Length: 101
Image (cartoon, rainbow, N blue to C red):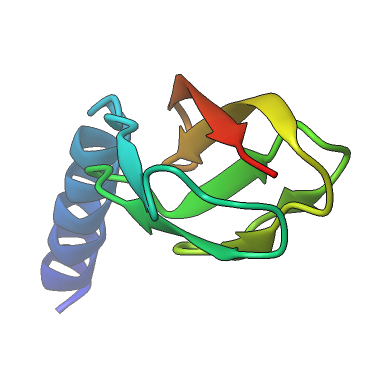
């Protein structure tokens, strides 16, 4: 019985380590493509193998939601940084969004 339990624990540990060795892939899109000041921008997470997410919308606002929404309060061009974590490794993607008047 002890050997079965130890074997089960070993298999679970190997599965966990195998999953953690996979590097997540960060990817996202946003809608609308040409937002105006005051529009709600929906960020759609297309990443793979992630369990935690960090967004920087480029205007001083951050989120850890998987698929956040954000309202830009002023016009301009903003750099959106997106980081995907899987507990051990991470990946990031950056896109530029232009908010019109």
